[in-house]
Length: 104
Image 1 (spheres, rainbow, N blue to C red):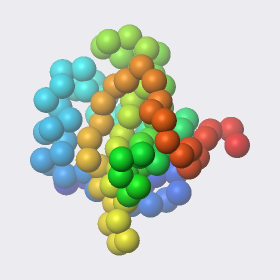
Image 2 (image 1 turned 30 degrees about the vertical axis):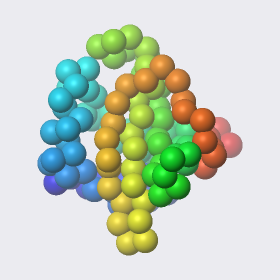
Image 3 (image 1 turned 45 degrees about the vertical axis):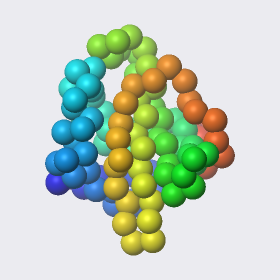
Image 4 (image 1 turned 180 degrees about the horizontal axis):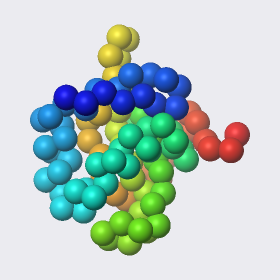
């Protein structure tokens, strides 16, 4: 298990099981270090529409295995715990309440 900090200094867990799930996607193999960077320095943090306790951290990377994409790291936030559910590359930021935006 790994532990990271986000931009608000919240500790976030990444279990071995969740990391294995993320790495099932070949394009994510080169992005494992970027997960920590996306948590620390996101461009956007969006509250999930389908789950208010899930936050989506986005950071854009111009050079990935599949071209320029956002890395989206989904973090489940509970009262005394926060952990990564998944991470993936995407073309756009999902709709939802913007909790934080870079350059505020």
